[in-house]
Amino acid sequence: MAGTLADRVAEAAGTARRRAEAFPGSVSKDALPWAVIEAFDADVRGRVARDARIEDERDRVLIAAVKLAETPPDEADAVAAARRHLVDAIDYLEQAVLRFGGVGR
Image 1 (cartoon, rainbow, N blue to C red):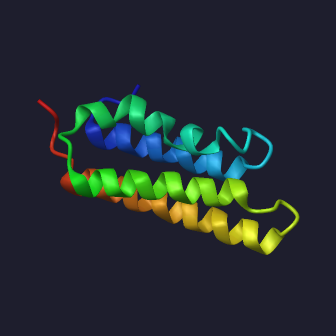
Image 2: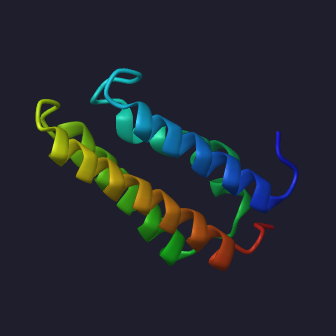
């Protein structure tokens, strides 16, 4: 497991991106939002002070994951756009944690 907060954040974001890229197929539609945010919640969220900006970005990741999960798989362009939107949301969450996430006490 990564040692510093930055390492943990990078690892959690990487896991989230891999799960987004592997969908559909690797995880069910209903489980995708929680699978994407799982590593962040387990390894990062409890280690940083609560900040509304971080929570807003976390919510944005969940919303983007739901949108990807609900996109019809036969619409390749729409799936690609939804996946890019989710990866962007993951990137913003990673940046928000690094910028605003003072280490929790």
